[in-house]
Image 1: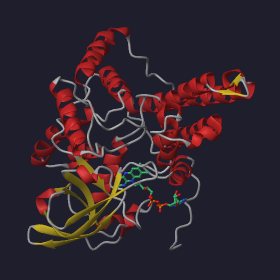
Image 2 (image 1 turned 90 degrees about the vertical axis):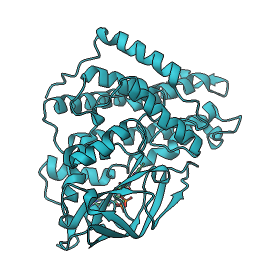
Image 3 (image 1 turned 60 degrees about the vertical axis):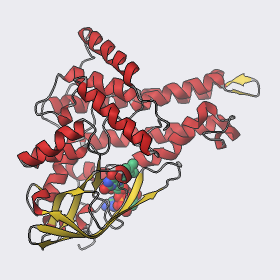
Image 4 (image 1 turned 90 degrees about the horizontal axis):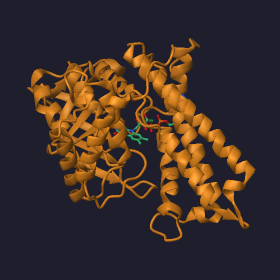
Length: 395
Ligand SMILES: Cc1cc2nc3c(=O)[nH]c(=O)nc-3n(C[C@H](O)[C@H](O)[C@H](O)COP(=O)(O)OP(=O)(O)OC[C@H]3O[C@@H](n4cnc5c(N)ncnc54)[C@H](O)[C@@H]3O)c2cc1C
């Protein structure tokens, strides 16, 4: 399929300018430092500012498709994602996937109780899917919900729960039905302040605390909080994950190409600028070419989405391309810094206050998040190329 996603036309310049003015006036003064990736603030004060930020965006009339009943102007959506993304400040707090689940499968009561408040930053959500023994093989999850009157009693453990330490609600998958595998799973809305929930933040090698372990000990959840129907959790989760497909947005790998070029220009080795070194120039140019391909893959996914022609393997292909290019570029960024690469954020000798070091430490996360690259390759080969299914353990 040809790419028909065009550049944002000039008549959107005014929209962009007024959005930039809005950002200039309202961008929150956070203690927290904006870093690459899906990062979570350390301080409650910053979380409060991020809620206000989401509220200000909403009140100014900037509405994202993920929270709207009907899609908005596609170019305005792109400008919004580009400009707000460029601030490095989260503009949707917590996990945005849940809006898709509630929009597609929620009751009218659930929609009115959650979609607007999410959009206004009043509700922060965390996604409670992965478990210590159920990540790639999510259908084997073991957290249980036992029916007791008009409530489920939940017991089990989740891990990798991004934003859980600040979340008001959880988008929980639990096994409530007798059938094994996907058929036994139900999606539930969980009030994170319910008795019996323990949240243990995990500090990662980046130094930040983006993930948590979440434990459930006889946590009561009303049956009215089921999203869809009991036993339909797999369908709900699959559909909501598919709403978060890669599109044109910002090409994050291009920003790294620019950083590498700046680093080469401003770094000298044995009296010669790395920008004058032929092999360095060749390597950065090769990254630039691969980044352009990524841009085109993104536009291709966007075009297919506009034509309702996205296949299950379009976004995975782009995700693999981006995450592996990103990791290679950041490894190269550290190579270029030589011995200086070991000094990180906070050290006055660190280049660009250790931005590339932090991004390097985080880069592996992109190869895992949203389904590991190995699992994505299985999906491409089986569903895209029609190769035989990989052997299953019980075969
Ligand atoms: C940044 C980030 C944010 C996340 N946020 C959340 C969140 O908010 N909520 C949530 O529920 N989860 C979240 N996750 C978890 C994520 O969904 C899982 O990490 C992912 O599904 C992989 O599962 P796992 O970590 O258990 O690895 P495993 O499934 O144990 O995999 C371990 C290794 O084995 C490989 N492997 C597994 N199966 C196969 C196979 N069939 N063929 C070949 N190789 C295989 C994998 O590729 C990987 O290298 C997040 C992860 C990251 C990195």
